[in-house]
Amino acid sequence: MSKTDFDAVVVGSGPNGLAAAITLQRQGKSVLLIEANNKIGGGLRSEELTLPGFLHDVCSAVHPMASVSPFLKSVPLEDYGVDFIYPDVSIAHPLENGSTAVLTRSLDYTAASLGEDRQAYLDLMTPILKDWPKLTKDILSPLLKIPTNPRAMANFGWLGLSSAMRLSRRFKTPEAKALWAGMSAHSMQPLSKFTTSAVGLVLQATGHVKGWPLVIGGSQRIADALSAYFTSLGGKIETGFYVKSLSQLPSSKLIMFDVTPRQLLEIAGHRFSRSYQWQLKKFRYGMGVFKVDWALDAPIPFTAADARRAGTLHLGNTIEEIQASEDAAYKGRHVQRPFVLLSQPSLFDYHRAPAGKHTAWAYCHVPGGSTVDMKDAIESQIERFAPGFKDRILASHTFNTEQLQAYNPNYIGGDIGGGVMDIRQLFNRPALFSPYRTGVKGIYICSSSTPPGGGVHGMCGFHAAKRALSDVFGIKID
Ligand SMILES: Cc1cc2nc3c(=O)[nH]c(=O)nc-3n(C[C@H](O)[C@H](O)[C@H](O)COP(=O)(O)OP(=O)(O)OC[C@H]3O[C@@H](n4cnc5c(N)ncnc54)[C@H](O)[C@@H]3O)c2cc1C
Image 1 (cartoon, protein in one colour):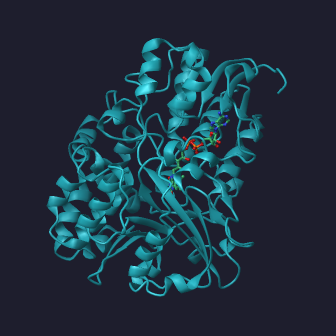
Image 2 (tube, rainbow, N blue to C red):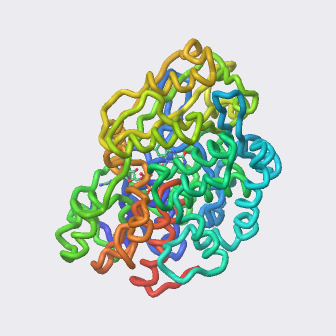
Image 3 (cartoon, rainbow, N blue to C red):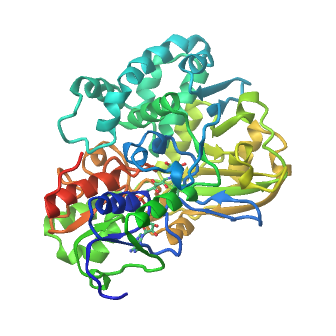
């Protein structure tokens, strides 16, 4: 790499690296974005993983957080080719008893799918949805600060800090408990843990506020749009360059790392104070995922009608089964019936497969670092709710946790959230009171290992860039 001066260098082009690069470049700073992979995007890539003509999202596929992200709203994504499609049913959660709980944009329709728990669901969600415009800013920011709206945040925090198991006691029916368990299991922790409710509430709220969209043509389109916008502002991108040490980088006033604490220590650890090194070493990674993509001869034959029209499915039957699955993965065990998160994008987007054919994307949580092949277990869980599914498979592709980490070094042990999001690391992410600063002038971290954590929203990158703009250049932005 040639030694050129830049105002800022950003290492890693996931949604957070891209968000940081854009936020800096927008302020007239010259920015170089460096990516190890030959393609930009991190968790936002789409490829023909199975057969020619079948386009699969390698990592993220469903975008509830992108749809409510203030940063992404500030970028003219549509002008750069991003077309979000919102399935009528965001989530379908079929149960073995033949009923199906659904999450749709309509609060009433969703509540009605929960039978006797209709009112309990309305009581839980109505105040949160009323406060949502005030809550978004605080929820998608570092939490250790005075909230912009203390009352709304106090109400949300009171519920969100509790465990999903505890909050599930508000419900009586298996449908409401199961829907709630599936939403909260995105926290990648046993549902008995504090703060698992926060994840469930946020994701449930996004379903009513906007819905859970897919991107026409695949998630890669978001990365392509962000990079095109960045270069239109004058930003530079270099791909296929794996950064191992600070000495490889061109000179700059600021370096922003879209990597997790373990990688940051390897690259720049010698520059950090002992206490910051200690905090990074203590940072904990969570469960991993085992992922499968399929090319299919026909749509998945779900028994439940609502499941056949849902963008995303939660397949884990009851709250008890989901809790058992998450608890096992957390404690290092594998179960025969894992909780499966599945998306069927080709139902809504004809770009994903040849005419009449289909794709599906799914994963389950497994112990960090697991190399156990969960393909059969995942397929059997789908077959349970869609008899005949296995007969429709033309080809499949799998990733275990080691392969995921080899694909993207940020997925340590297959952890797709950038580190466990328990009560400690909700606030201490990756360091207390200074989430983006490293203590060394001009070096920052901006990945999902910082607040507000995992998911495609770019808010970690935005907040890190905002901090750095103020510290290094004296520029304050909102
Ligand atoms: C299977 C799977 C399914 C998911 N599903 C969803 C979903 O449906 N919805 C959702 O919102 N989120 C989902 N996620 C999570 C989401 O993808 C991540 O939370 C998000 O991508 C994190 O963004 P990031 O910018 O912090 O890091 P990443 O997207 O991981 O990007 C980091 C980038 O940095 C690069 N890099 C790392 N180290 C170096 C180095 N030393 N030198 C140069 N480059 C480097 C990497 O190659 C990578 O491109 C999923 C993730 C996976 C793996």
